[in-house]
Image (cartoon, rainbow, N blue to C red; front, side, top):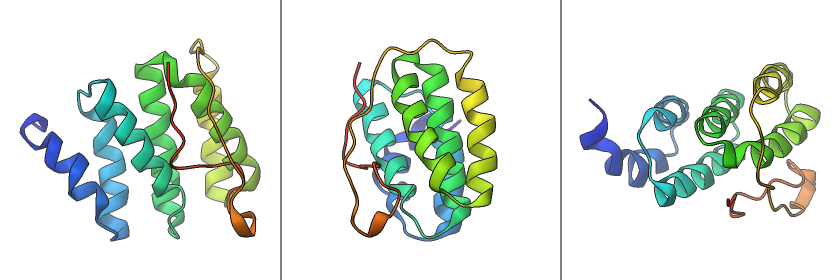
Length: 135
């Protein structure tokens, strides 16, 4: 049902700044059948969502990244590292969701690491939305 709108979802809708659009998009993106390049773009987009001012957007982005990592275990280690940081530094909702998501990822075998860098002002230190998670 979503397949005809996949490109529109990734390239246009996902870039809308309205928080309601972003959190619903974060719920939709992991349900799309994505090739490797699309998956990399979606992951980069979801990592940008982690910098959003809305805690709901951030929490749904964490969920979406976890769902993608469970679908493709090549992303498990990178997403796990990201969730570790978010669970330490995020809002109460992010910490609670992060603990649940980390528990889910323990059941999936990892095979990759996430590149990171420091952000100014201590904002989600170590989360680089431009870093790639590669196989």
